[in-house]
Length: 204
Image (cartoon, rainbow, N blue to C red):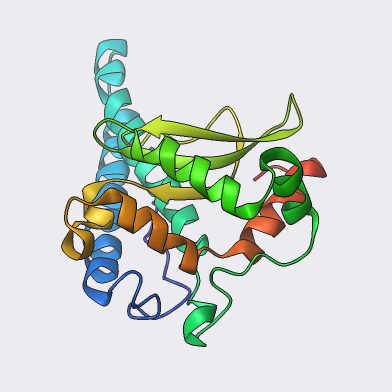
């Protein structure tokens, strides 16, 4: 079954002023769509491949574009219109299991944001910053992945795209400003749901 581009759960301008409409439109319609199109093509060619060598040659494309599709599908639901603008619930971490775990692990939400931003800003080139749940250690951890590699070692709770296409048209090369701004549109309610499901053993 072919993969398709998931619709955004909000209008393209809903995250302004923190992420503008132009970025969201291009990011979703062009970049994410490109990953979906390339993934479908790679999987079709993989099925048709006649030799192990041909199948091995296609694995890099499946990993890159499949990861791009997985990561971005999570990313869109990871965001919400900002509460600070009276538009939605973005940026609000309510009392609950996730807040308690963040406070216990990092000391406070602000301390977590500071550590997350420092770790993610240090990525060389393109990649993703993650708050992940380690099912073996049963702890929240900040981790990064390169390029479009999906997070496989942890259950993703929050993911932030640090590819330039996610911020350059608005923040130019100042990644730190983008990382500071994105917390205003993080959907902590979605993150809470993912964390609860992860700690209760559900597969995400």
